[in-house]
Figure 1: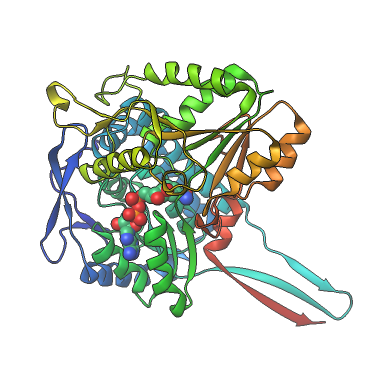
Figure 2: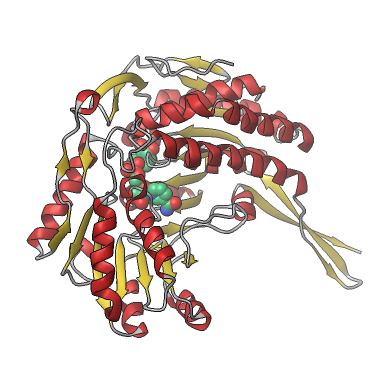
Length: 485
Ligand code: NAD
């Protein structure tokens, strides 16, 4: 199989690769070069209608296909992702601007892991039964929902897309899915892989287009009974407003403003190394990045000096260069947003300790969207810079005196996605983990993921949980059957 990025991306509907019905396309821009390198369908409600029809037609057969056959197909998709690692990683980097080595090492391998995990998982599903002594027995059937919608963002394009598709398909649903219009190429290449893997026509339909025209039509379609969405809190609110009165099942994975809480007794080297990653990996465009760094006062100055020196050495530049640590941010629009956030930090009285500027590329990256790793101090916990998600290579530093003060600062946020805690004191680690209002807590590590564990946020970071059985359960409808003995 020779996977190649085309100049024109196609929708994948009813097993076919086809043009959008309205014939319209959006330019796909490589953020490292600032140049158009392909075109994406600008699909609308008509394409969604066709995709839903195909999914509906495929459902009776797919939902009753024996587990082992479903396993074989989904596992074959995982194998084909592995076999096409280089082509997929290059497509992801050209779409997104992240270093190619990162796409190869993390994003694409995790996409195949998602398919492998849920393919094997579906072979081991068991359901509950409840005995009422000698009166009756109840058993719970977990049936697939039918046609479900999956919508994903641009920051980890194939990884987050497959994190939804794989459990939805494994549970026996048929899917209408939309990757971000900003990074559509790996979603398209996945449709080519699905055809090769023998996924029956209509089981998965991947359509490309914008949020307002294509995404909103998926959410509003009456035949789509559940929606799994990852993206901004703003779009999550719109989606909830449409889906709630239609009584759709909803999983919303939204924004974050995560605290990275560093106590004086931490393992210094590990903390420094990891904090550099949790601050700037993927140009700070990971929902789980620790964008608020909270440091115990007694080590604050030492931390600040070393953190600045280490961040200064991060090479910003061409994502295809293996020495690059920071590639381009995803788009011109996002570049402007992050630069405006840096201006806001200055207006609010923040001191820029490092960075704060655009980086001019050279040669092929002359027109790319690069930003220096940026460190800000001197802002209180409730200012906009510390409350609003920036989603770029920008972190703030704040100091705290006591554990209680650290907790108050950490929880002064409308978001509650993740938190990291650095301490060698086991009791404190457990105490703080229980008190921080976030769905995912890392102690002395960051971004370690076991696919079996629940994943998701509190507060404005969303509702519902993905991962493992949580995801398989989300994509099924439990039905209790009570039999009187
Ligand atoms: P976005 O909300 O702009 O777009 C996400 C997806 O939703 C895209 O496919 C987009 O086309 C679509 N969309 C937008 N508006 C829509 C609407 N009204 N109806 C239906 N679909 C719509 O987000 P983004 O800029 O692509 O991604 C960045 C955001 O995603 C950040 O806020 C980040 O924190 C968040 N994120 C969260 C997680 C998590 O697991 N919690 C993971 C990654 C990213």
